[in-house]
Image 1 (spheres, rainbow, N blue to C red):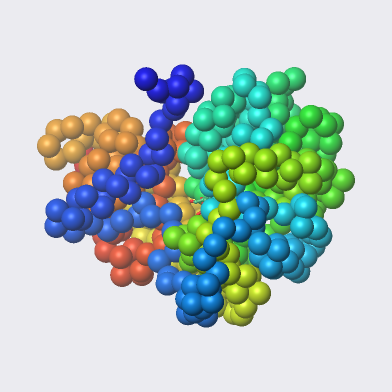
Image 2 (cartoon, helix red, strand yellow; image 1 turned 45 degrees about the vertical axis):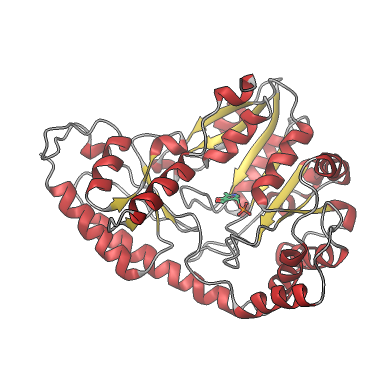
Length: 397
Ligand SMILES: Cc1ncc(COP(=O)(O)O)c(C=O)c1O
C-alpha cells in the first residue's frame, strides 16, 4: 500500500501527456506536439566535447553530494557576473537537475502541514513536490488580466501563521510572465514583514526573455532577505541540456547544510560527466543564447499571430520562457462534429489530439479554462499546428 501522502498526489500531468504522445507517435500518428517542456536545439558541440573528454579523462567516479569544487567555482562566477550575487562554496549546491534540487530544498525545511504559497497557473511539480513533503500548497490564482503575476495584496492575504514558504518562478512556466525588479521589490516589502517565510526563486528560464524585459531575481533585489532565499537555476533550459541533469542553487549556508545532509542519504552526487560539461557551459561562449532567444521570440510572434485568428481564444504575450497560455473560455459549450460538448480545457485537449495537435490542458497548471502551448518547436510545426487548431476550432458549432 502506498504511503498516505503519495496516494493523495497526482503524477505530473505533463509527463503523462508526453508519454501518451510518444506512444501515439510510435503507433504512427502524425502529431504536432506543443506539450514539450524542453529546448529543441542540440546541446552545443563544445559542451558535448567537454562531456566526452571527461569520460576519456576518467572523470567517472563519485563526487561530493553537492557538486565538485570546480563546478561550484563556475556556479559562483555565473551568479556573480549575471546576477550580482556572491556565494561561497558552502552557499552553493548542485544536483541531478533543478527538479530534485527543489524537492530536496523543500524536504529540508517543510514540516508536515506547513503552507507553501504558489501562484497559479503553476508548474505542476512545484505543487506536487510540496505534497510529497507533506506540506500544504496554498494556490493563489492570477489571471491574464493581471499579467499572471502575484500582487502584493494577494500575497499578504495568503500569508498565515502556518506559511513556511513562497515559490516564485520568473520567467514563468507555464505563463511566460516575467517579474520586473520593481515588482519583486514590492513583494519583498511584504516578505520583510513576515520573517518566517522562506522563498524559493526558480530562475530556470532566466536566459529566455523577450523585448524590453530584463531578468531580475529576488535575492539581488532584496539582499537583506538573502538568509531566507534559495536561488535555483540549471543548465537544462539555458543550454539545451535537459538530459544531462544538472541543476544548482545559491542560498544560505544553513539551508545548504540541511540539503547536503538529505542528499547524502538520498540522491548522492550528480553525474560527474555532466558536472564537467556544465562547467564548460557556464564558463564557455554565451553568444548562441542571444540567437536562440531571437529564434524563440520569432516563434512566439508567429504563434501569437496565428492564435489571434482563432475565435474563442484569448492570448497574452509571454515576456519570457517558451510557453503560451491561451484562455479558451470562448470555446466552452461548443459542440464537436461528433456531438460532444467542450466543457473544459481537457475536453479541448482531447479533441485537438484527435486532430493531430498536442496541448496541455489547464488542469495540469491548476487553472481552467486555459491551456499551455510550448513553442520549443520549429516555425513549420507551429504554422502547421495552428492551421490544424484553427480548422478544428472552426468546426465547433
Ligand atoms: C520552472 C521549472 N523549474 C524547474 C524545472 C526542472 O528543470 P531540470 O531539468 O533542471 O530538472 C523545470 C522543467 O520543466 C521547470 O519548468
